Image (cartoon, rainbow, N blue to C red; front, side, top):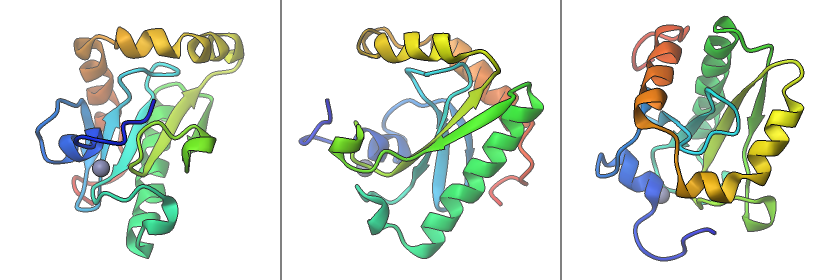
Length: 153
Ligand SMILES: [Zn+2]
């Protein structure tokens, strides 16, 4: 469920007050590993400035989100992904669970639909038992090393 009160988890990550496995960052966004990945290598590109909805983004923020997401997707493909889902859940009815704009970059492989469906069904459990930080950090480092953007570009 989305938290309506208390600190926003992504604002806490942006401020460095909450742990995250950072893949890449620039002045407008920070890319982190999803702690409950739908597939291995699932990255979230989080807009640095808090805004709940896509319509609240400035034009540079909106463009940056897709530019960084595209670079993450290219890195994921270079590491073996056959395709990439780019998704923004905008609004509670669209299953947005954290009301702070973020772009999901989900690496896909041919034939992974059953595994993806299983992960969707198990998401409540996975949020209680998040992935190993060590494994997520290793994935973040591999993706970061394959990024086609210069640092802080
Ligand atoms: Zn926030």
